Amino acid sequence: MKLTDTACKNSKPKDKPYKKSDGGGLYLLINPTGSKYWRLKYRYLNKEKMLSFGVYPIVSLADAREERDKAKRLLAQGIDPATAKKDEKKKIVRNAQNTFKAVALEWHENQKGRWSENHSNNVLHRLERDIFPFIGTEPIATIEAPDLLDVLRKIEKRGALDIAGRTRQICGQIFRYGIQTGRCKRDPSRDLQGALKTRKTEHFAALEIKEIPAFLQALERNDARLYNRTRRAIKLSMFTFCRPGEIRQARWEEIDMEAKEWVIPAERMKMKRAHIVPLCRQSLAILKEQKEETGNLNTPWVFPSQVRPKEPMSDGTVNVAIKKLGYQGRMTAHGFRALARTTIREKLGYDPDVIECQLAHKAAGPLGEAYNRAQFLDKRRKMMTDWANYLDSIASEGKVISLTEKRKSA
View (tube, rainbow, N blue to C red):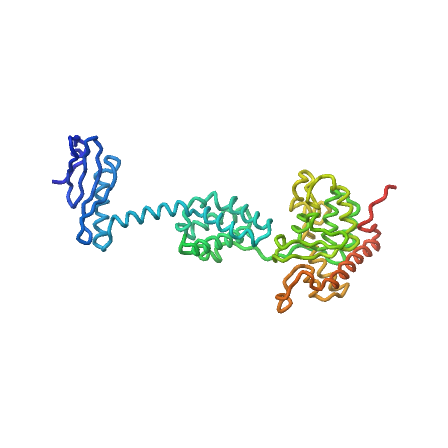
């Protein structure tokens, strides 16, 4: 006779455990303590086995029957329900350990040695801000393309179209790492190609050659009342045309004033290769002035933060300063690289290979493969001197005092 909920509820404990059967191998075991457990007795490969479904009344009669029917269906497929249950528990534990955030942090840790510190921090910041709060706790194996798209749409709605696209690429790398390490089976980011809005590619704003004198005048007049170290950072950017991150994170230990060289270590370079920047007399003068101002701050940074000298200058400082000078939309910190490349080629006549080498770009063909940090070094020393002298000469023609000469009081 099949059980009823009333019969289950009214079953009283006895001196010994006893069973109340519901049929199909399902029964309720009543212990002397009064506890009641659901059990299923079945045979698998001619061997009698038992499966537990939980405690009554937490697991109701209807729930127990549903579990029994699931077990019967597995048996019909030749699957042992007990083995299937153990596998499911393992999967649950594995998913709890292999959340998207856990896999992402493991992937990030493995990549750090290949990245610059700045890039590593940026990737982690994007994940912590835009991804982890929404799908970080989800098992990576359960995340589908629509789940990821919902998160990326939040970034897109801020108008940060480029960041949304780059974040999709980062997530794709994490999913592929998950596949490689057996934590998921597919990369849903691949299904989102073309799903996000894109912005027309724009190059970093940069001055034209004819605009240089006016820019130098504005920098020298300093109507924007910029800090001296900010102006020096702008000047050094012009003379060396290094990347903004390389300028603001320059450390005194990298600079050899006697050898007239700045050697940027590989871990701070985009191409992960150490890079030599020859220092002309104008650059050396800027660095000397900077040392005089910041030497007593006990900071490793050439351009420390004005507020927190133990930290480097903010990555937005130079761009903000350029805007204050009146060049918003016309010039950027990164634009000094394009300005130097164009002007040195057109006005000074240097070979593009020499220019690209100083820009720390990987040249095409055998030149790129044979890269070493001293490549074309003698030619680059002369080029950097000629470039600085050219800037000084047009500054003079524009009735601007030399970029490295301190303004004398009247």
